[in-house]
Length: 484
Image (cartoon, rainbow, N blue to C red; front, side, top):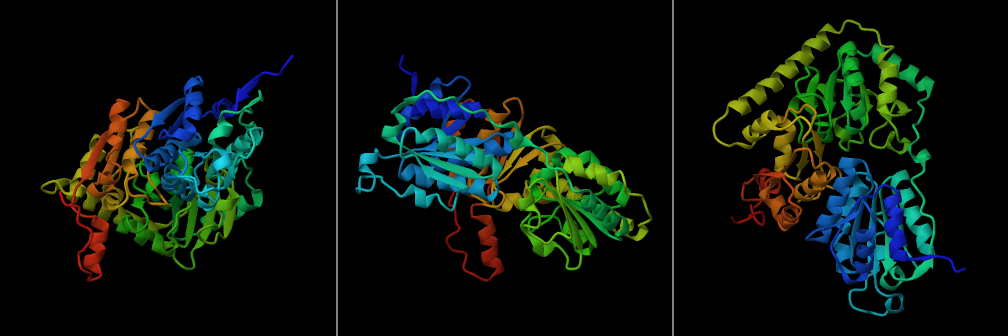
């Protein structure tokens, strides 16, 4: 009796579904139509057509950031696949699990100068953690499974090239593999490292806790530790809302777009506990400060700055073990300094809220007062990020950004992805007129899907960050005007 067969396209869709993929973002094209059909026929999975391949990949990256699931994007060969690279790099830079599927010419035309041919293996090499083009129908089963595994393990984007003719080929029905449970295993922190961290923190005179999004499940323990230590808390931009804005130890975002108070406090620290962050501006960390870093990935430990004590483990597992052993001691002078820094930031925010007109700072403080506690807020790149970082006092909101890649235009595609991931939650995109213009066509995508998202545009008529630097550096204010 002959074996049952499936097409390669059907196998790919089924294997993605077995790993929990429920949405694929992309733009239809000739080489991937059979795969789109298989996605359409796969129960519980849908294809989300975007207006540009670059936006589709940003949606997939943002979807992974928001939901914790693997993001998947799909592009036609040649121009589509090349445009998709921008969003793939976003996932690479922020270490987000993503699978990029690219169509390809029929194998008989590869390398012959056929229209829209491109060396996608070369183009995607730097942007991915795994990068293969399927050369044989049976090879597809191993390649797709390897791509999913590498996207999660490393983590980052994996690309699979799928030539048009191979997608329609039949292969013996292969059992799809579910996501292995061991990929979600919890690393166990080394007890001597815990001991060393406790000793450093207890002997610190000016302790500071530096929190990133990776510490989101450990916030109660983080706050308890800050109170016991009399430690200031500074945090990354994605951790806005994760650390309660009204907590007296919170000094705000650290970095070029952060608060002055956070920079001043971190500059005085003698011991810094970094939890769940791969922040990229080490010049803010004072020389001579001792650093304790907690992260669930060994590849993140010491990646940005040298860690005197490196602890591999999830923050929600490690911080309670540290907090339970710390004894409270007198740090009166440090406490007074932290209180004064907090008062200065409070006064700055109050002044912005009470100001006249529609200044960006006043818009952001008004948003903080009105937005839902569980809202998802997507930020674009540019001056809008500066205003949000300094003046948004969150409490439970989730912030999505193009963190290390910093792709202009991120906010609108990300808002679409966030609303699809969490349709019951409020979604707000904050952008400038420059960023909005990058992917204005995605309003059609949002309207087509009937997505209730709010877009706040801080319009200044120029590429604001670049305009400000031209003035600062004494350059001609040229090439930054946006017209309307």
